[in-house]
Amino acid sequence: MSHFETLEFQADGAVARIWLNRPEMRNAIDDVFIGELSAAFAQAEAAPQVRVVVVGARGPAFCAGANLNWMRKAAEYTEAQNLQDAGGLATMLQTLHHSSKPVVARIQGDVYAGGMGIVSACDIAISADTANYCLSEVKIGLIPATISPYVIRAMGARAAQRYFLTAERFTAAEAHRIGLVHEVVAAEALDAKVEDIVKSLAGAAPAALGECKRLLRDVTGQPITEELTRETVRRIAAIRATDEAREGLQSFLQKRKPSWLLPK
Image 1 (cartoon, rainbow, N blue to C red):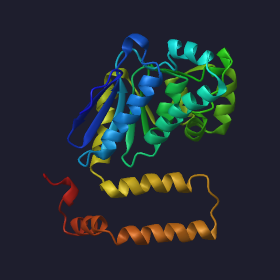
Image 2: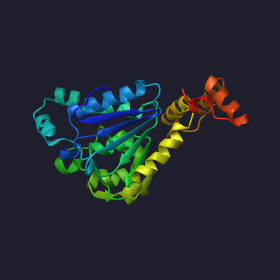
Image 3: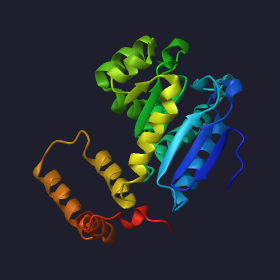
Image 4: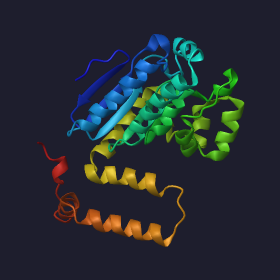
């Protein structure tokens, strides 16, 4: 396993856990953090035994947005340097979002600015009831541009109109109401709820999970046309012909565990 400065990476059987680990900096984002998070996801993606990735954080905050020193440097960048710098964050979010393995956000504390992009790019987000959320960019003359495709998809355009423009801080309960997070639990119940979700994901067929993720990306927001209908028919027909689907059906009919749940 790689050594990281800003993260911890743990792989335990079917589950990889990535911990944001600069609590003294409230797990703020900078260029090192971006590169390491991309590398950690690539490592999880390449590990055949890993079926689920959990992103958590050490300390009181999940991710407080951009590191102030990084922002000071960026203020002196040329436009070309800013393009390259912003491209790194965009690539990291895309790597996370396009992981073939389900990604669960374990949110124990506050989520600001770029941290909102990380949460939104995860497939499932479980929040402690004490966490707060904020898209704070306009307060300092910026816009949440790079994270916007993920945040708008997660919370919806109408909620984004409010929180992008006002930069209000909002509660975990509000994050749940608008769809940014899937469930809110007491802080002491957070790990148990995350493990329930992980158990459900780890019990599913690995290739089917990856195809489900691709289906969601491709179908969400698309008009229901003849072309889309043909494509969905093609996809179910193709997956029915796979060894994994045949094994899943046979194990169901024979009332036994499928091969992907048997000890290696």
